[in-house]
Length: 201
Image: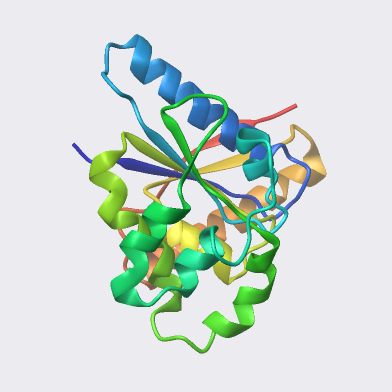
């Protein structure tokens, strides 16, 4: 069975994206458990330098250069899997919800990655070996379509666009759909799809 990778994305802040991502990840673990799945496991990935998702689920945001997503993305290719295993943290919410923490170090990584071959695929390649161990993966992104967000979109199978039910906020849906479609069609990632629009607040 294919492990679905949900990416919560919107180029506008304040639409409850991080809260939605964390609650959905937690809800997935609970739903799997109540459905009779033994040892349900969901991976939550925080790609935002503000690390709000990490703070919500682990109680801290003091992760950094050696124990966060930054560490994984900067690791040599042959060291990515053991580095990922070292950085994963069990959430405080549920033993089945694991977190790959974000950190402020992610704010400094963009310029470096632009000069690295295959940089847009680094997150997808890092997550791929873990997929058989998880029932689902949820990725929270920044409120902009920078390289880090594009890396998350490449890694996903289902994009979820959180949005407030207001006219001006609704305009950002078009940009989100265009960005996801451009990556899917322009780079030939046919497994990428828009799974839905989530009305928040």
